[in-house]
Length: 262
Image (cartoon, rainbow, N blue to C red; front, top):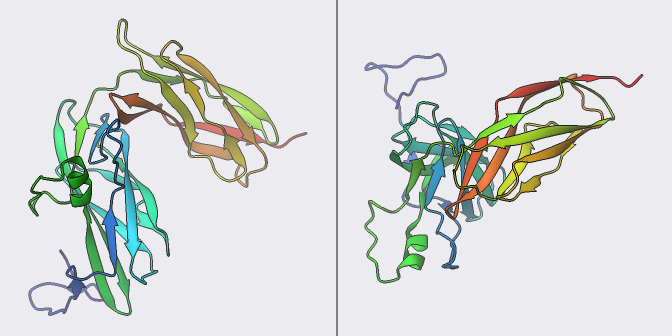
């Protein structure tokens, strides 16, 4: 931890008082319970190198409305997306992106915490998993060191996502975006959901599904009248039920240029 003043001064000759309360924070973080034994409890995840997995974070507020920033401790150097519980928000899907050099077959631990402040005081709370673990085995003894620890297993991407993106579209038009899943020969196939991410307001694209017998689908991108002239950093995300765990595989990023209607 590094603390400095408004002028950037810090070091051995500076003295600061920092107040952080973890003993009685006005909010608590948890993951949703899952009592249906046909589905796994959400305390472990799978992801591909450079890919994303989503932690469903619930927040119980105790008359506490300010935004809460989510932080991550991990044995991997991960990136975070949607890492903010907005004012009075009760849940969020925290998107965690693995580094591209993560080793398939490796297992890593992760911990999530939230920090916020009110009236000059900082508060923090760690995500707890004890209740979910007890739902799995009510007689189990859950040590404090295990509470809040999640796990992510890195797996090799089971297929490649190929996208034939339109280089250019007219505003007010609709275009089909062919998507193909390139499975290795002889590999087992799974049902998948295909969606386009990164669209701004004024552009829409519905989600499509593929069964384990098909490998191509056309997404329909409708562009009304967004303010910009380019749709940048678009990506097709394919989500599959990978041995009862959601696994997401992405295409390469692409850009679509927009032209005004004549």
